[in-house]
Image 1 (spheres, rainbow, N blue to C red):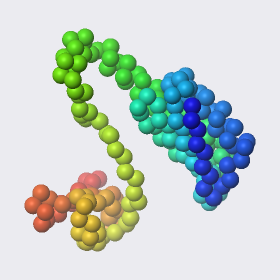
Image 2: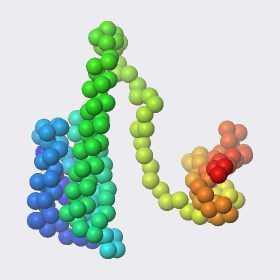
Image 3: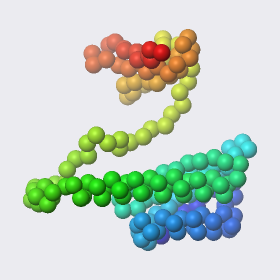
Length: 178
């Protein structure tokens, strides 16, 4: 098991390092010793934030929590990661049980792995700012690589999404009804 611990604006003491290592041992039962853990600890205001990234068996798991007590934040992260790992393992086990031997043989003969479909494979985090739809349109125009922008409409105080239409000249606006 490889563990890397980084402190941002917060010193990673030996006690914290030992605690993270001890708690990470709970994850070894899922992957054996083939496990990479990256921990980042930092202080944001009065709260201590622990962010853990785990790479095991080709999967990446991530948990971020904030708490007044850093040890409680680490405990919560480990619980979240353990839940994510169990969910993935259960899903894989069910898929392997229901997949017929013939399907496995055919995919083996083809020599290529099936493509991932209907799965969320990437998550982006960004700040949603309050603005008028016209301002959102201008901001979307200033970033040609983006095809949509989520924002809080200052008139309705609800989340809206503005997006470029396929003609690349006009825009669409998604607003919730209620």
